[in-house]
Image (cartoon, rainbow, N blue to C red):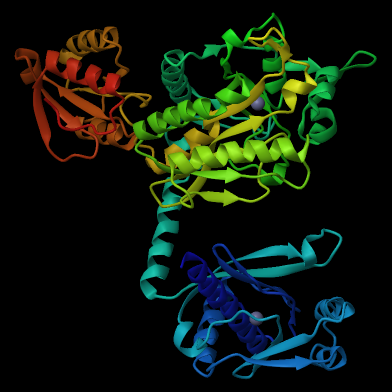
Length: 585
Ligand SMILES: [Zn+2]
Ligand SMILES: [Zn+2]
């Protein structure tokens, strides 16, 4: 069912790209057409225009598309010879190149015609364009090299999107608007969470408020993992080349690493992953089967030299920390250990009320080790997921495993319905072998353990980027950089407010006092813009009684409570890591 829906949406969108090209050719007949596929968010078509066009031309193209589609009853298919096909595209080197390529291995060429417009195409269109193809929008213009190579001509790409119904199109456009408002880079600057500087592209600076988020997430992670038998370690950020040669990173991953040469020929690499150092810690003493599972966790900062064009705020950064752990187990313990990790994932995502699902990644084309071991590992994960989620009820990403073993990814759905790959739980038979890790089995023989690499948040940086968008900057109380703002009414109330703030701080609450000369109304507005969960206005009335008037983020009413009850309510909500701020006691 889902398959055919996807296919019909793809057909609709690819048909829209024909329509876009038809409109462009009507408006600017000397344009050279190239290709126009459907993509995940809609479709595009790449053109070589004889004079540049801009965003301001998009409405006219769209209007022409609506006009033309009325006469597009259906797509007519026709087989053509290469020489006939070339006649249609005289003077268009792009299409001529495609025709040569397609006809080389004896493939038949096909033309598709709709209305007065014909294009070289392999098919995959909607049935009745004049009826089906009504709800589309051109989105943007970008430069794109012919066939993606910077050695080639730069073309103009027009992006658009299309949906079967007006409602779906409107919902999608509204979602995009909302996503723009929630962009974590925008909110991160407004809320003073983090910043970047050109001297270290892609590496965030955590500002005081943003670092609270990191620290709170790590604190929660520590508490939950300590209870489950995890032991935290920290290890060097730089290691000599020799380590990366053993781990295989030097051969497979060097291009993504920061490398430093010291003195004559001492070469170091900044760690892109924690695994090799976890292996070293495992090997540092004699281990017995009684020590397993041995769970070595850490949150050290990692560096990866991501291409500058792919950097995107916190979503793809060059320095970041993972809530990492390497769990060393015997083969018999794999299923139980996965169970336990799934339970942690449920706890974590439950706290944020985030929906998630599991996805199995299987053996990639290039893999370490032998196929039989891989088969055994994949079978183990399949039976764990069958039991956990139900046979056939989870996604399988073929060939998406890590090069050292199959994995289970955690895919999260955010408040806007977007999917994000967050945590991952990877099975590894290879690295323990490369590092010669051993434990003594019950029969006295030396055996190699299996490593499970696992992260639940994924990268903390990326997780914060995503929850900033998901919560639109209104973090749950326990995560909020500032939990309470006290708005002082007048200068006679200052001392009292600072006293009460001290009481709150002693109770573990993050509080600030606004004793500026602003009006109370402005102070309340400022606290609301900063998305602070609770705001108290304190003046004569509050000083004389035990009563407080509490303004809750996002709520209209001011709720009365006593000073002591307010504190115990905050402590309770923080201890529960509650998402809801209401009701007050
Ligand atoms: Zn087509
Ligand atoms: Zn690892």
